[in-house]
Length: 199
Length: 199
Image 1 (cartoon, rainbow over the protein chains, first blue to last red):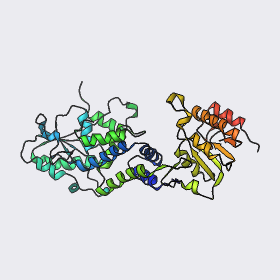
Image 2 (cartoon, chains in turn blue, cyan):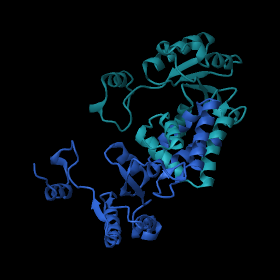
Image 3 (cartoon, chains in turn blue, green):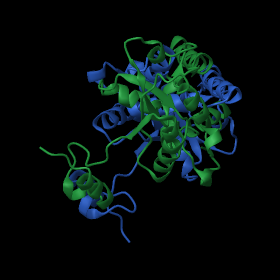
Image 4 (tube, helix red, strand yellow):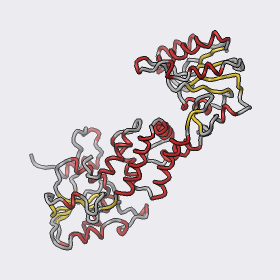
């Protein structure tokens, strides 16, 4: 930007670093900030600092929380015998939105990805294994993403878990509800055929 | 979001208030912030506060600046006899990008819009008129947007300026460079015909 306003340039740069924010959007966001009043700016910067300062990982499931142990792990009404393993805290939010799952979670914070230099030790796999020590867990659901890396991570973790005598399952593959068969890719479609259920 | 993390919810809410940021984007931005280190968060919040604290309107042209008078108004090499009137500071940036215009600017900070309760007194029209008092300005280019309100504002201002003996011009209408005639709307196309130039 040839605008001769260093403070504005710096703000635009900060916004441009954010995911899926291009130059135009960054400019729009910066002008939005300029239009805020004192109190609103304070609210925005406070929310950013607070989120960063207060939120950390749950000591048990590694999901994000403001407490030592997250509300899901603390909740006695959840089924403590089932653990759903996900890549990312956002996946927990997505699954919670279904209101179908009543068990606990374990957040890996990534997937095994040699190309990005992420090995098993960079994930919270060790912490997952230690949760199985007291034999209270009877099923682990691998809910990593259906990508090459997500698959490989699910396979890797399940091989570590099976010798411990725990049931390991994987999310079902198939056509997404509401989607058009015509536009489904071949892999998804063949998985949907493989996994067909009797009516 | 059913995530039980108030600090995260608050941050997502702050981002969702921003223009063209929906729930999904707001969530993505919030997780981006959580992934920043101490120094990066400091940089982001500082940029926001700084932009808000340091940037204000130029006392002459009402464009945004960190100084009392903006670098364009201060620049002796610009043609001080020409003023380009725009709606918004972003329009100044857009015109400066062309590197074609060497005159000064005047930012109205809006357009006359009775439906939104914006009258002439809510804009910086009075300040524009006072800039013409010393007879150093010989042309005012109305560069408001080609919308109904932009047009009306250009007409209103030009009627105030003409009695002062200053030349008032308007940006040319026509087909945008690189566009397809086929997809040009009728109004634009008829304006392009009207304004045709000899080759």
